[in-house]
Image (cartoon, rainbow, N blue to C red; front, side, top):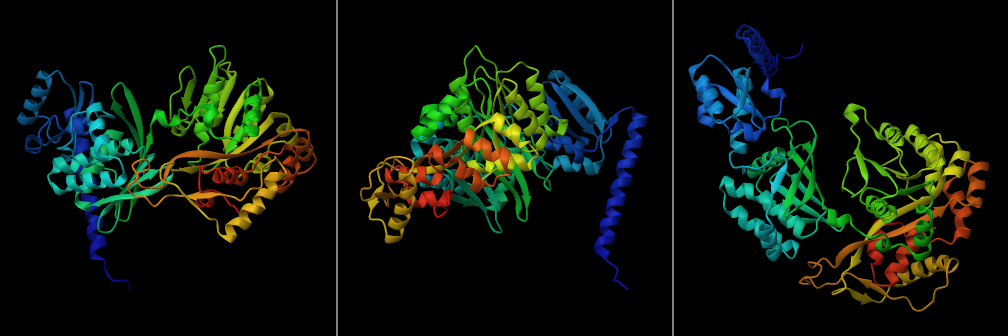
Length: 562
C-alpha cells in the first residue's frame, strides 16, 4: 500500500480552495453587475500597473492590468469600497476611461508581485525602446571590441541598485548594435546567467551576471516585447523596436523555459545588414551571370536552399531589389517579415488564424502579381501552387530545406510534385552558406600542411574541368593572432561572404527528371556539363584568394565530399 503523500494532498487542497475562491468571486461579480477576471490568465501591462502605486493598490485591493491609450482595465476585490471609488475618481480626473472588473485576492496577489519587477522600468511607448543617437554614439565610442562591452557590463554590475541592474539591457542592446551582432543570447545557468553575442555567425562569450538580477531584466524585456509577465512555463515570442534617430531596428524576442529559468534569444533585424547589392553577394561570375539572366525572365521558379543563418533572405531580398521597377507588382509572403522593402507588398503569415504560406500564396495570386516571393515551401500543397504559379506567367522565388542544389529536385518529388511539372517550371536551384571573411589588417599567411596541400590539389582537379586556373603553389591565410586589432575586435574575422552553387534545369537535367526518380548524385552528374562551381570549390577559390580560411570553410561545408 502506498504511503500517504502529505505534499500532494496539500497541493490538491490548495487547488480546491483556489477554485472555490474564484467561483465565489465570479458569483459575486454577477450580483454587483461587474465583469469577472482571473488575472493569472491574462498579461499584466507594466505601464497600467504603475498607474496605481503599490501601497495604494494593496490597501484598496485593486490592480490596473491593461492600458491602451487612455483606456484602463482595473480589477478590484470589492468594487463598492470607498478607497476603490477614490482611485476611480483619480483616474477619471486624469482623463482615463476605466473598465472595472472583480478579481479574487489570490488573483490580485499575482499582479501585485509584478510591482517589484516593473518599478524600475522607464516610461516608454509600448513595444519601443528609445535609445538616442547620443547614447548609441556614446556606446560606440566605448565599445570597439567584445572586451570593451564586457568591461562596461562589469562596471554596471558593480552597482547593485535595481535601476543599475535594469540598465544592463540598455547596455547590451546598444553594445550589440555597435558590434554589429545578429543575435543576443541570455542563458541562465546553475549559478549565474551567461550572455553571448553572435558575431559573423559565431557565438562569442561576453559576460556573466548574478541570477538574482536577471528577473528584472527579463521582466523589462517581456514588457517591451508585449509578452506575459506571469507566464514562466511556456515558450513565448514577441518583438519590439529600437528607435535610433529617425530610423528603427526591430528586435525579435524568443523566450524558452529551462531548468534554471527562462532563456532569451534576441534577433537583431538591422535594415543596414540586409542591404547587400545584388552585385556584391559574392557569387562566382558564371553563376552570377546565369542567375541575372533567369531573374529577368517573366516566369519560372527559382529555389534557394541552406540552413538557418546561411543568408537566403539576404539573397532573395537582393534579387527583389534588383528586379523591382514601378512597372511590376511584387508580393512577398514571409514568416515573419524581417525587413521592409520599398515599393513591394509584403504579407506575414499567421498560423493561429489559419493564414499560412499556402493561404498567403493563394491570396497573393488574386492580387495580379508579376513576381512572388514565398518565404519557404514546407508542404506538398504550397509546392504545387508555387509551381503552377510559375507555369502561369509568374516569377516565383522561394526557399526549400535541402543540403545542396542537387537535393532540390528529389525533395520536390518527395513532396508529391509531378516530375514533368518540375522540369517545366523549375529554372534554377541554388544552395549557399555564409563564411567569415579574414580581417584584412591582421590575417596571416602560412605554409599549408601536407594534408591541406593534398586536399587542395584534389579539389583543384575538379575546378580545372570547369575553368582555366593556374596551378601555382597554393597560398593560404588564417586568422591573425593580434588580439588588439581594432578592425576585427581581435577575432581575426570581419564580415561574411556567401559561397554558392547552382543547377540550371536545362535539357539534360530535364530528361533525367522526367525519365527517372533521380537521386542527388544523378542530378549532379547530369549538371556537370554546366561547369558551375560547387560550394566547396567556390569556397576554396575564395580561400586561395585570401578572402577566407580553410578552417572557416571546414566549419560550414564538407570539404572531403566528392
